[in-house]
Image (tube, rainbow, N blue to C red; front, side, top):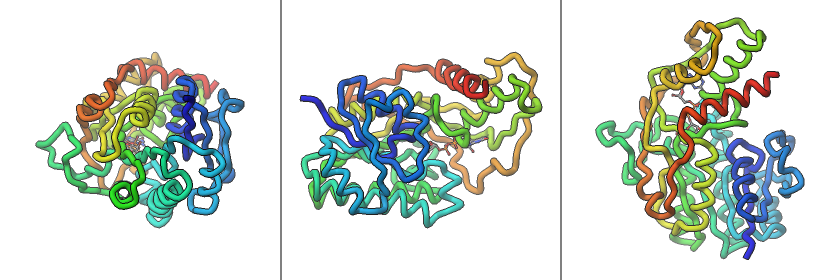
Length: 319
Ligand code: GDD
């Protein structure tokens, strides 16, 4: 039978890629977005998805949309996703990431008790993890190092409560960094690729601003990531959380070098104090064994393919 999905944050970076993935697999897809959200990421899907304007902080609105769309699965992606945004506006981050998740879980329980809920948490919950335990398995304890991570810990605990006590079929996923076309240039790979594309086009002096190049992150192509979200809905049992990651960590400096190698222009690299963070997790490297055993998922895109796609995307945007 055709499956029905409701995606919160459908016009966002991962939300729009997820809509594309699900439609490609024959799902009926609807989603919600806040008032005034830019829908550019959905341009190619506009006649194939139903988007309702809905404030995730209004339980009445959320309940109304769930009753209307009757989803089999709710993919809860809406939230603050950029770490410095949460650091600069903690109350707002808690409202959206924690109260928004609570509203969605409560309204799912009330209006779609048989629906599965996929709650998108983050690798950031591991925070200041013991570095001798890399790669990180799901058994590591929560050690959040920033407000964003703290909101994700609270959202996970809320989901766990709704599953254990209220019977909501909620699967918690912990994505590590995911990248690809359509991501905001606040995030690192888009930040670098956009600057390179602007320099190539003669729209910026040949100076590329960077933050901390010594941190290491585990990057997955967003297309692999959203395929994992779909497989989670199809195969995962609600109980334990799952890491979604490549299993490999790259220094940000190496990512920058790979992007620069894709361009012919001479570029000077300058550290921008505004891009440095107060507290920074030095390395994230995940272990996705549990998820692979449950679903058979493996990442398919190499980091080089993904970075080229991102740079080409920004070249197109700049033109
Ligand atoms: N954004 C940005 N811009 N980051 C930079 C820059 C820059 O110019 N230069 C260096 N960095 C470093 C950051 O300090 C960080 O160590 C790393 O690049 C990645 O930064 P982001 O792309 O902003 O991602 P993040 O690691 O903070 O968080 C992402 O991954 C989480 C999962 O691990 C986000 O996608 C989160 O939403 C996600 O939960």
